[in-house]
Image (cartoon, rainbow, N blue to C red; front, side, top):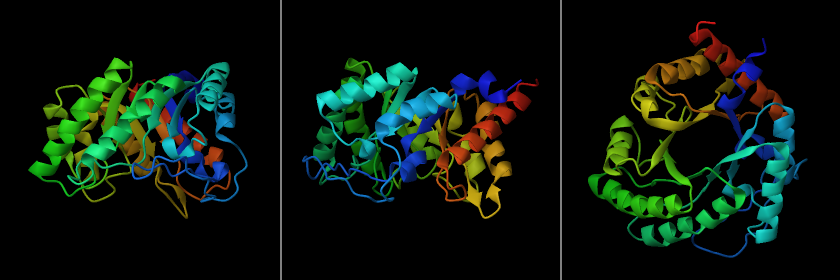
Length: 285
């Protein structure tokens, strides 16, 4: 039996995993509400964002996460066209990833919270199930965590009213370990979910730390670690195993961020097949 087919609903792909294929980015920022010009940050690209739902479906992946900086336009017409492309391909927009803003900086937190709230209509237009925001970038402290919690609570009410779930992830200095992640989730009383990320804590003790948060994760960025020898399967399968043992049952969003394969899809599918094999093993099949 093909493991990937057996566990088909357990996988998503992020547009970040195809940033070289896309080439360009559009650096939206809370400091400037103008439509940003395209930056060929990763080259000219060989596909457009609207191509990806069909490409993903053809490879058996029917969940897509979209980075905000990959959206070439926020016009109603473009968003409708992109949603049409996902629906035609049978692909669910799992998460809109809002890639800027800092809710823990007292000088800009209100501005950034207002800017993040502006993405709710974009997520709704795309039919996104979730919106992931950056909880904060400030060095973790009681004051910084409390400020982020205040703004996240208001954002969560607004996203919930639009039928979208707000999530954060273990990312940046505000959430450097499980104690801070769990404090924030507890303070928010279930209003905000967790997207666990394998790659954001790449340090000694990361397995123990990830095990302390993955029971609370609703989503997971499954980032594979590559070197000149290819995918570090031991690291990858250990992260999957600890997540399953902790009780994680959600989708694994495949994050490929390497030049090991020129064709990013090759790396994405290698990650998928590795996880699928591990899930099968853990299921005892």
